[in-house]
Amino acid sequence: MAGTVTGDIRRDKAFFEQRFTNAMDFMLRDMDLGGVKAALLALDGLVSKQIITLSILNPLLAARPPKDPRARLSYIEEQVLGSMEQKRERSLDTLLTLLMSGFAILLVEGCGDALVFGVQGFETRGPEEPQNEVMQRGAKDGFTESYQNNIAMIRRRMKTTALKFEKAQVGSESHTPLALCYLEGVASPEIVAGVREKLRACDLETALGAGYLAGYLERRGLFSGVGQTERPDVVCGKIAEGRVAVLVEGTPSVLLVPFLFVENFQTMDDYLTRPFYAAFIRWLKYFAFFVSAFLPGLYVAIAAHHPELLPESLMLKIAGEEMRTPFPVFLETLLLYFLYEILREAGLRAPKSLGSTVSIVGGLVIGETAVEAGVVSAPSLMTVALTAVAGYAVSRLYEPLSLLRLVFLILGGIFGVWGVTIGLTLVLLDLSATGSFGVPLLSPVSPFRARLVWRDVAAREPWKQLSKRRARVQDMPGVEKKS
Image (tube, rainbow, N blue to C red; front, top):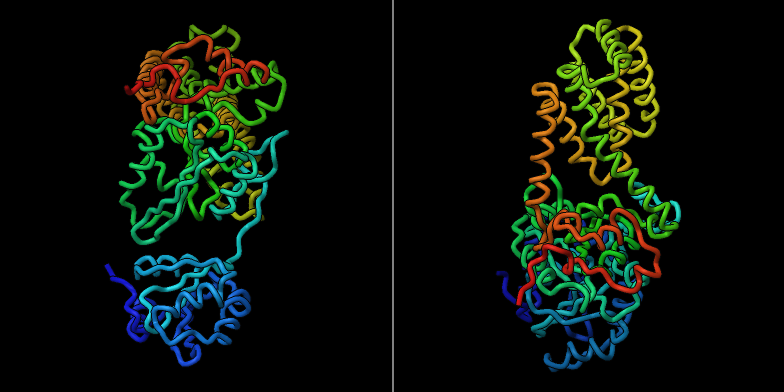
């Protein structure tokens, strides 16, 4: 603990100067206020120099504070700078954090408190359409790196006093500010308290993004009970169902807890289109999920161990293609899988100017040329390509899908269809055993509730029916009710 402001301006200034030794962005301006010594502190790049000059320095230099030390700060606070956003603070540790957050600090000789002014002036990115969550009919604005701007975007959509934002902080070194967002009276107090407690127990030294905190809010497992979104309308829809959102300074992604498995297949467009089309798109996504997860493993399992399960013409076609290649079907598909993942990572990390080059090399040179040269077979290449495309239909699950493809591919290549079956059983066990803040991850599919499944999982009811009863996450089947 660094202690508190002493009122001895030389001693107080020395404290800050020692902490910011060799820091070229540290600014300290000594002043004489009618015979009273004072000092204004700020960090260059985090504050607006124009606001400091016009709204703080000019009025201060014209001020004549009283000789009584106890009245000096009140005079400056109420008579000189009464129009400024300001507050008193005594703790030196708190003042350090505020200084590094873009506030200016005024120290006055003989005063045991410091005045803190909100004069932030650093550049921020304006709202843009999220690149990872493109919608056809939804709003085109997305979250930015400033969590205060993100709070305002949510507030504009939810004009109710029940909307609460609780301030918190994580990171013993970064002191990253964050906010818990929920609807009072809708969100479960137990869930809110659980999120608050887990964040308080976070022992990170540095938190530079929302993903740092996801591991502290979820149970270990293949599928996460913590969702992420860059869209304000999605956050508003989720907190209206009793969820808690975590907004972290410095990242455009917002965490949502609890997050159910079925919500990975839902988008905001589902609620802006007609119900029959929303149901059709959801079933397409369910099908794409199974294709992306199981197709490589089933292809290898059947081609290598159970060819009798294939129609005769297809079996002969695959056998003829495999005879032209030097590798067995299992090794061939495995190599294509890793090759695709390498190309995908290269496309993500390469400069934009090289993006087209990666596509040409991957699509023409490695794909078509490899088939014509007899290095890989066309059925294997088509299987891996179809698997990759299907995975993008459920982009939120791409990370676990990448691992599932590899696991099922290995199990299918070694044990055949029985290996894929065993892998599916283990995945279902993992899903059934996973929960988020007391809410089962598979709810309402397991435990099964037909009314809820047909309401907004297998299909989507029209808004006339959806609006009659609010679906709260704490009311899902399988949630333990505390008396």
